[in-house]
Amino acid sequence: MNRLRTLALALAVLGASACTTLAPDYQRPAAPVAASWPASAGERDAAAAVAADLAWHEFFEDERLRRVVELALAHNRDLRVAALNIEQARAQYRIQRAEQFPALGLSASQNAQRVPGDLNASGESMLSRQYGVSLGIASWELDFFGRVRSLRDAALEQYLASEEAHRSARLSLVAEVGGAWLQLAADNERLELARRTLETRRKGLELTQASYEAGAASALELRQSQGEMERARADVAAFGARVARATNALALLAGQPLPDALLPVRLDTTVTRLAELPAGLPGEVLVRRPDIVAAEHRLRAANANIGAARATFFPRITLTAATGTASAELGGLFESGSRAWSFIPQLTLPIFEAGRLAANLDVAEVRRDIAVAEYERSIQGAFREVADALAERATLGEEADARQMLLAAARESHRLSEARYRAGVDSFLVLLDAQRTLYGAEQELIATRLAEATNRITVYKVLGGGWQ
Image (tube, rainbow, N blue to C red; front, side):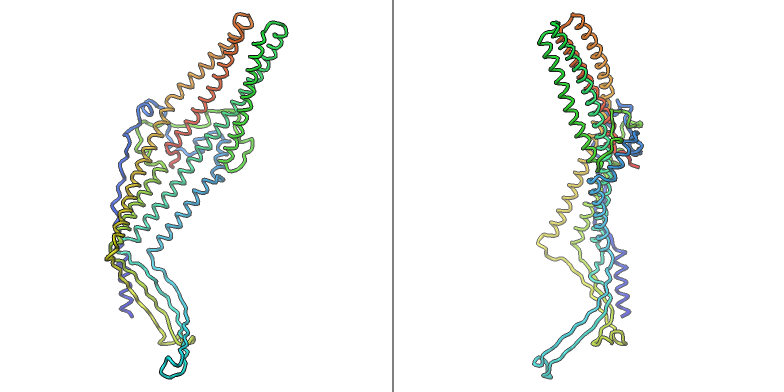
């Protein structure tokens, strides 16, 4: 008995010490992107944003927007699903990790048997009973070639990938809430502009109606003035619907209806802040984005699965052992001499599998190659997102200045056209054209300001804001 115990202990220690894996040495693939941002995106933009260490509550400066983001992080259902996926992956990892250790079990049994008389030498029926209590290990694999350990490593990497996917979903949600909040602000401003324009058009129609009745305006001018008023009224209705949809979208992201006190009234382009980022740092930036980190963890998991597939070509050693008591009488289970034990080591060596093991290894290697391609594609996509966002940022400031100058020119043109019309120098058609130009310039400036504010959020997102 002591010899068997020593043998079991030696096998356990040997299994623990020899637990190496056959997985290939992992090497991170080289990033298939340029060594620096394109000149139009990075080097020309001296004010490109650094988002690495800037938490979202520091990035957003408007207290109402911060509160809406907090509600979204607490109640958004998509983010909740991502968090539950982490819990599921954690449980899967714990299950796989438990395979490394022996599972101890306590069992109690009774075996009763009646043998008819014609089946035994005495010619009389016999009734026999056997009782037993045992504590043992069932089919514990001694992981000499690292199959179980490789599966554990793969489960760990999948769990870490789910955590990074949750971080990515969280960052995307923060950016979506910020974008939806700005969109609602812009739609509110457009609606207010349309209402002011409608009031102006209504007063103009009243003046034109009075002039027409006095014989100073033609029927054509009256109908044109009426058409402009109806167009403004249609814009009020359309922008009212857009405000309602934007409010609903923001409520969906927040996971609950929002009070009016948290909703924006006008578009404020200073609700976010960005620090400076030296140009030409794509490698450092991209490999720290949560979606790319998640892709790398999935690549590591695929690499570990190759080790598990390779280990199946080698012998598997399992150990089953139990010790306890057995007796023909229930009361004799714990008496002297009732001791019982069993020790069953088993070695399984694959000889002929019709190519199944080789095919499984091929599958694991192909999945690793797929994971490499997906990792490289993630880096390339991230590089493009950052380059596009910085390129847009480099031109939005100039576009906003041009739109502002265009609006100033349109206002002056409208003032002069109105004065010339009242003086009888220009026709009403010239005045209408100036009114349309002014209204369009005001709308375009709002759109440009929205694009500029939204771009700041986009830059924060694509740079993987809030690493720390």
